[in-house]
Picture (tube, rainbow, N blue to C red):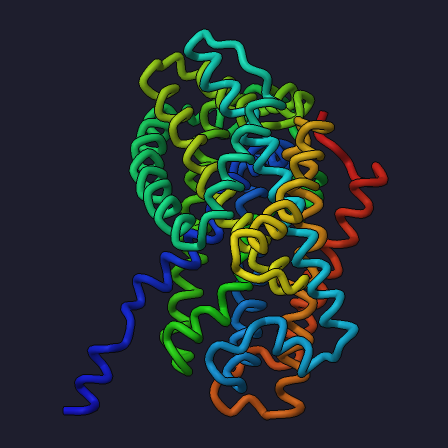
Length: 414
């Protein structure tokens, strides 16, 4: 009877899958077809599958280490205990950098998509001002309470899911095989452009901070949490593949060059799709979906940054304390949005660079240190030291690719 009650009280796996999938899928997906135009569909899909494999296993390595601690132990606690203060500081700085740069990216994205939405209604509005006002609205919601963010996120996420399926159902119906297979180009080259896409792929599979949250949610139940990670990341991979199919099957490869030259922001991609499809209803769905995608990503990222800074600086939960945290959270990226309003693609790329630390390198080191100290009695990621080495190489390789790309040492499709 007791065992039956316990089984019934275990949270559904569906909730965990949605936490992982919802964390991964956001406005960052709009950067993928633009940066992957050079590698095109099949090579880009191969890069996404490889990145999915590595990012899934790095998350499982965090779980392996986390299972040796009480439910509720944070990523920060585990890193400090197993790797020491220096690695913990580096890990903390990389997390803060990623959250700040993504907040800036979503301010840039929100300004562009609000500008595009109002332009459809024949209302002229500056993208800079639109991004600033949107950031202030989100800042107010985050300042109010976590509960306010949770309620708003639930509303936005529900709307995003509905518009997602409506939009992508329509997009797939318009896919042209000749465009997808790029038959217009004679002897095209794809493989040389694959490397530069990898940091963007990595940034599109970030969920690792949620692993300790799942253990707090489910307890020490590795089988359930593993399923959540596998299915959550697989859903994201599937949706990314559909998104590439829908965009690359409708927009010719060479047309992506102009999109990238305009900063690759969301409004430019939506305009390009609208121009090719010539469908008023689909254009409306694209605009609505992109607004909800930006809003849900913005709320999730800024709440994470808000909580991180409150803990880091010791700000209390009083209205004044939350105001201090809100100012520290929003002022730097808002200033960046005013100065560089079209930095969405660059920001996502730099987020991928910093994420190599806490989403690849640190998890591999945590698994190795955990095995030395505890022996991993509850769960061990398969593949032994070879898998740890692969994830370390994956992280270091992504960082190297981004540096080489920034220095102009990798081929760029133009």
